[in-house]
Image 1: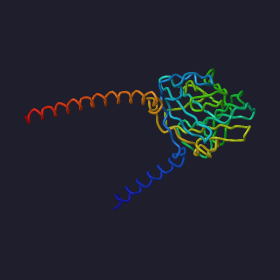
Image 2: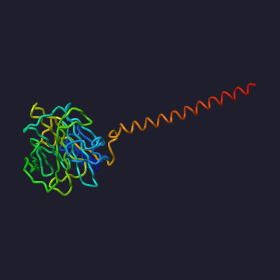
Image 3: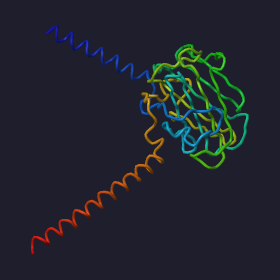
Image 4: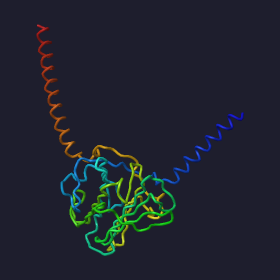
Length: 266
């Protein structure tokens, strides 16, 4: 009896710890996979090549904005891209924001594993680190963060709009250290001209990491739909050729069978 009670108590404690971990982590209702992709990203605020961001997972922030992340583990880099489709005005109050929880530990306040990157008014880069109760400014290492934005057309929207790109060049050695997924993630874009905020996870709070979304896992391949247009065209072409081949073969077989039947009836 004592042994059974001991096992039951141990299982209860384990469940409690698991529940505590779930409660403290980022919001699992909003999760994504980070892909390596195949196209190199040039941090210049425009689509430098047609497939530059089509090989990683796009994530909606609102009906008017989206973002994506590209990981290159062999280069230890994280690339981010954000688009706000309805914004083509240059306002000092505009804001790009990326919050990272390196180990997805969540929490009610930013701790020393949490980081915040902000671009204010398309000109000023500000970076912060959690201290257990809030945010304190930090200074990134030289060239640790590279960013650019511009008003441009993209494959996702032909009307000129703001596009933002950022690279965290060494996610293991710089001031902003981000381990392998799972990681907590919050992405925000604010358009001052319309007083519109787009964020992921929706209604998340920069000061409460448990409300952020999650980079749940990492895939060293391109996003399956990233090269879907070319792939579908090629696959369709192959399918047509194969179908034509088997159709011809079936027709030949049918003609041969008909001829053989006719001969046998003579």
